[in-house]
Length: 159
Image (cartoon, rainbow, N blue to C red; front, side, top):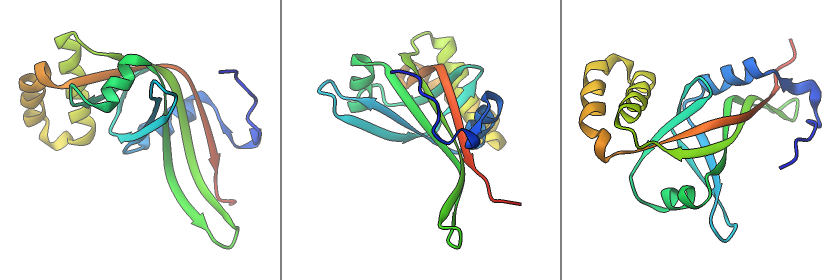
């Protein structure tokens, strides 16, 4: 896909701000394509580790089938969306990641990714999360999206 200039360049976020937006979001929407070109999207909990996004899922299913056939994906994150009725607009910050997904098969990387997810979403239950990550890694699907690009955009309220 060609890289185009953002039409509203005045709303563009730099890489650091886009990553911060991604890190604040509770979930992202993973978009991929079925073999026949039909788009498919699913909301997921993800955690970032450097230029890698990790998520867990069942080891089999439609999403996994599509990822195995075409690993090119994008993930959309939207933070602080709020309708400004008087301004006839929506205020938000968003980040869009493009990358390639790979199935994590090394048990240590799987455990580490599952632990990162537990620490992000249930930090008060670290001990339970560690136990769960250790016990379930061999039968839990874990995927990593290698960030190839990230863009961000915001429409912040006027001060």
